[in-house]
Length: 123
Image 1 (tube, helix red, strand yellow):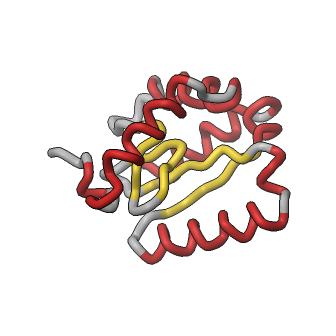
Image 2 (cartoon, rainbow, N blue to C red):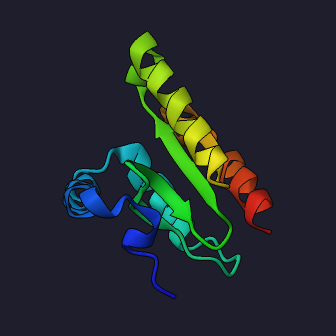
Image 3 (tube, rainbow, N blue to C red):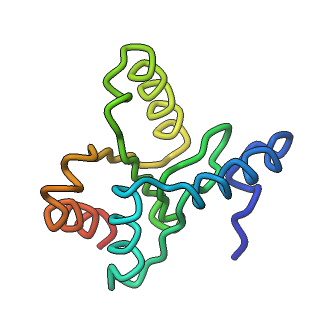
């Protein structure tokens, strides 16, 4: 099954794809730590990182389960960014995706709990 541009806006897919590739090359330490866990989750599902969906790029996504995982750094506390995140989450939910967010701190200090939460969503 191919998911490429089918999950993204076809008119800006190439822009999003190139931006997503750059994001993968420059992922944060927290995204890297979570990615290592998601690759070996052992639940029979596959995650993608920095995958275009609509006009957005999801940090991590499990397409068959329609699960989006976002890793929020400190700038997500900024009022303008928080409002953007809210709109983005609402759009994704409207399209049938379930969105869960974790802070950098949750990944740094409670990674096992984060992984358990994700496993519960995909099982």
